[in-house]
Image (tube, rainbow, N blue to C red; front, side, top):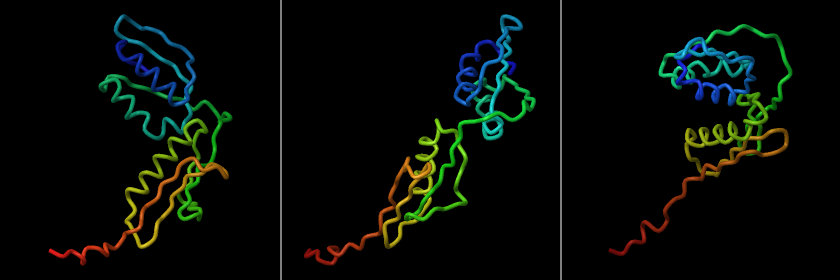
Length: 150
């Protein structure tokens, strides 16, 4: 990653959050720095470039080379709707981010689903452990609306 020196702190934080390991850090001049990290390809492929450009106001650039396969601490994050697994929504995520991804997926699905006659339970699971849960409440009929005596 090549960047102006003033953005190095934010870029180091971004790389560390993405599961990167610092290989080298050097300052090319008083205004420019070069960071070398070993990052998982899954992190780079999703939205790493957008976040890099946002943090550096568009001034940072990065290049990458495949570094081979390495073991990773990942888990399958499953989604259950009314206690039934939805295989199409299963994701492989780092175990340290499983709870955060689970909460985000469950919240997004809850906001997108329409209310129905029955309650809908949405759960994010890692193995048999539930990491996030939301309920889409049923539509209730207002039976007291007709009783207004005015």
